Image 1 (cartoon, one colour):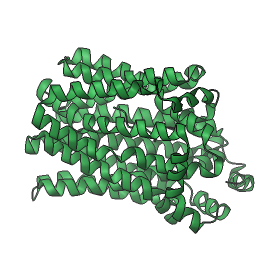
Image 2 (tube, rainbow, N blue to C red; image 1 turned 90 degrees about the horizontal axis):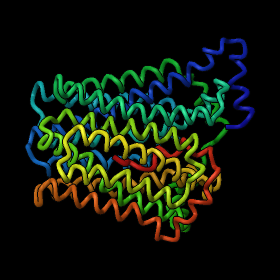
Image 3 (cartoon, one colour; image 1 turned 90 degrees about the vertical axis):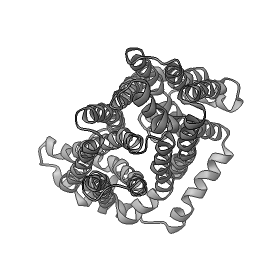
Length: 441
């Protein structure tokens, strides 16, 4: 957005109260909170529904495939769709459509019945709509920050905190809802969150923001058509980015198995209460929220391959090995919180590295390609996790996942490409920009 555009956005509200200028961006943050909290609720409820309806860990893995494949498709195409239909409209339509697909699950279950195939189709449709909606909200932030006269770094920091908080609150709420009423009513609350998000954007985000942005940045068909491929080519030519994407792609496969199969099965069969999955997710997210804040404040001073490898190992290995040894809930929850603390520093470090390596004109394309790329392994990981539990048992599968995470997390210490992480110290602007990279936990 040009400076003239920013001035024209702010000019009509020169005499308005300060709170009125800030209302649109605060409403956007609230909308993000409700939509992302809904995603966290679905993340807990859907695997539990698959497990309770079928009794099969493999079925939960299949449901995980149908939940994660759309992230790859939506991540690759979401930016093009948002550019085509506009930020505000895309956000509203995506939230309404997501709410409808989610609420259809408990409605069908309570009326005509919910065959497993129909459940998978609805999960797929809901996941397909999430990336465009999230992208639309993210790209609205700079314009609304200008309207509010809020420093962009501060707006990005608030957005990062909202993302982490939504996961924490949504996971905890899901656990309570599942315990009190079951997974189907939890999805009804999830759908209500999407509707509320759409209403907040429709009522409080001004149309002229998107309109003026389009005027200031006219569409470039060649850029849009080649964006995804251009981003992939840039990553392939840059050793540090290539190493980061490969590492996160491999660990995301493990984490997809963990969140869609291993942790739901552990909560159901070992801990004896599927609702505890929500508290497991919430504890990890709470630790990650604190970790992001600490890194943004002081941790970036020690950013480098040693800190990166240490955080990666601690983010994944302790939870899986603790569950492999049958850790009870009072032991497991603190382990998850401490692992989340380490995970909270990973995304800012990766984003800092990307901002140091990617020129301005390539950032949207490279970040879009990275988002789709690191999600590509998640469907395979979810399916493999379900198959491994069925064939070899839960505890051996957890042990293998923990050991794999140990090897992968420590790999930056021996792979030369990761030495570029040390050069990223001081790029403070990226501390809040990396939330789209990894799906740890």
